[in-house]
Amino acid sequence: MTRRVLPYRVPSEDVIDAEPWRLVVEDGEVALPESLPDWDYHMDLHVRRRVRIDADQARWQSGLPEDASLLISAVWTATGSNLSGPAQHVRVTEAGTITTEFDVLLRGSDLGGLLLLDTALVLADRRSDARPSSPRRAGSVLWSDRAELRLQGDAPQFPMAIIDFARTSFPDDAAWHLQICGGMEHATMGALLLLVNERNTVTATAFKNAARPRPIDRIVLSAVYADAARTMIEYALADEDFGEDADFPDGSLGATLLSLFDQLFPGQSITDVRLRQRQSPALFGSDLQAAVRIFEVS
Image: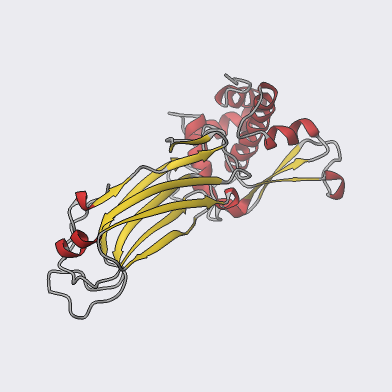
């Protein structure tokens, strides 16, 4: 729970009883995990939680009149897509204990990276009659908390689409193709797109089963991710702006590639790896294969 020092009175923590977020799965509900390593952009997320508020105490302890309207709301933010939005909000005008059920379905295509779920109790309307020590502006936060769910595991994640390669300029029999374009400052979500050939049923099925992969699916996904990592690292090393001193914006292609480089080559300098890649491409390929731990599907 987040407790900030605010320039106005706020209620004590025991006024709000917020149950933890839960993830809705096929067999029911489970506690929201720290991460979903097998998540992909075709996997929507369904989350729930229940929040109880002692509205009388919330108003009284905040120095608000009995008729003050409150708002309990949930907002989601995805660091991988740089998207956010309101999940659900409920206006609280009545007295007594109020129970709010949050039931939120999030589209996988909007997500990625770290999913942040922020819940807050705020003042709904401006109060011109408020005491000097009381909240008066609409949106003044009386209480808030945040839950986090990491949607990216060890494999690189990016938007993807399953299409028929026969209708494109790609070879009809290719299994996949990673499109990567733009400079290091471009947003990752607009610079990367993994295309999977629907004619290659083994690969297409592996991605459709990504939430619950079979052993063969894990092998296929490992091969795709290894190839995608190679393409991304080679793209990065070919750009002279990609270096140790680079400072790319959050959510940018450069920041994503730096993160991937640090994950695959911990403790190694970009200059050294770039030199090895140019002088001995075959050895570099083997180094990268070892770094991504290809086919380790346990």
